[in-house]
Amino acid sequence: MAEAETHRCPVCGAPVKAGAPRCGYCASDLLTVRCAECFVLNAADGLCCSGCGRELGLQPMPSPSDLKCPECRQPFSGFGGVAGRLSECTGCGGQFVEHALLKDLLERREVYRSLGVAPKRENPLARPVRYLPCPACSQMMNRKNFGETSGIVVDVCSRHGVWFDPGELPRVLSFVEAGGLERARRRKQEDDARRDREQRVEKASAALSIHRPEPTNLSGLEQAGLELIEFVLLRLLD
Picture (cartoon, rainbow, N blue to C red):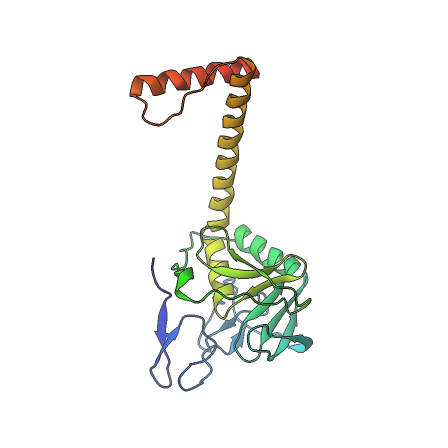
């Protein structure tokens, strides 16, 4: 599994992870221009937002927040959107996004998505597993692989929102733009249809007292015969 993309700090030349708000060696700010559409920080020389693709212009003004970062306990800066609020840590750069705002960001990303390139996958096991409290209610959040296959493990409070480590929100938006959520939904539909088919076959077999053999170690002819039996059973059940 590929490691996270890295860049070089323009000030000291040290390697920094893509999306990091500042250099870990010289503490220079790397991302200074905030998008007014999705609130993602961008490089000063960027023309379009790395999070939503919109042209960068006037920046949103932060507002005071009573919440604190669950990671480093630094105060948040709040940014209000039409659908909800994004809170960003002034220390580590992590972001807590309310569910309504995140839903709005993801839906717009899907509507306007192009043939985007999915972000490089990180190994979720490369970092130690830790559970964080929700900044709003202090209940421990659940860790979830966003979209089941993105490799981006986020922390979710079912009531209040989702916590993104520094640089994760732009990667999630890129994953959505590249069709990641659409593929995940299609895969779930296929899995649900397969399970429904198997349950219907088992129900029909039980009703007709037909023993359904295990599909392992079957010859080609036996497998074809099993599929024919399943087809007939399903037709009888319909």
